[in-house]
Length: 377
View 1 (spheres, rainbow, N blue to C red):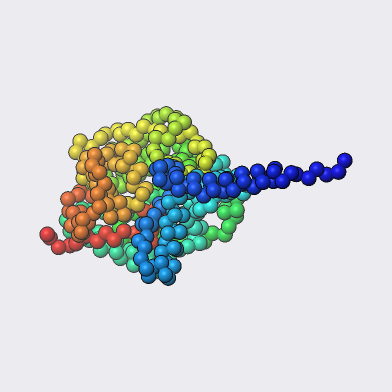
View 2: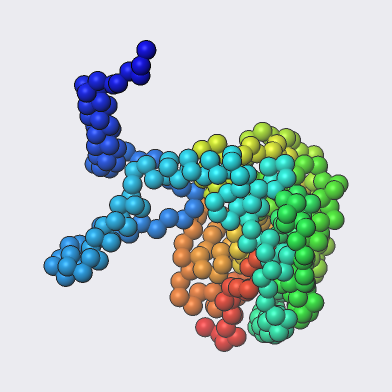
């Protein structure tokens, strides 16, 4: 028997069905937009342009069409789902992400920009930190004139503390001295507490992970391991005995109690994110609690939020404030608000101690523009 030739009717039906599918694919996003359908937002910061206004000039020179195309792309109702599907395919096929998140060993996630700083691939010159040393000296002098001590803290960088969990390709890259060592060698005018080295020493004896595998920041376990050192440094500055903070047991949990512990997994924007390791949530106790706790000002990057959300800052201070990047104010039981004009240069006088903290990734912006005014107001 010879080959069977499809009938004209069958070919016509296939073509007609194809046309209907194409039209449906074209009109479905518009229908979804008009009906208010939307997919789950992406994990990263998104910018959405406004609907462009049409006029004769913008229509004639083509700028209106370009802006409409940009608006339509950003506001496509299925955009998030399509991006997640693409990211999932890249992850399954090539074991990598489409952004700065790096897949390490045993589902450990890292931020590549934090690895760059750890490895010295991006760094500032020692002269930068010599000038920073002078800046801190000026800050300390202004605070000391009002009897307020200053403590500078380095929070731990995950890429440094868990370098053995990095992917082999990054472990084999040549490293050189960078911001971390330059800072520690140059900044000598003020007390510096290096919690990166503290956690590096303690991680082998601490029960449970000190970073969630899906997060960028130290978890509660990592922070609590560093709290005795922070308590001792703060008490020494204030001239009072330390509280004797220590971990007294804890409990394992399959779920994350801090949303921040999944920030890198969220930023991956996958359909099926990598699983989170079990977390250990320790209990922090004190041998002798301070009867009257100092009023502490913490000026920090996002690593300061772990102190706030785990209650660690409440252990150190009765009436604290957290100035996030010296741009917004966080207080216990109150919503975050923007910092008012000239507020940071004046209100530091209300506190008993000032702690300025950064991880090595943010040393370039340290101390976040904080410049206490020496004049009375």
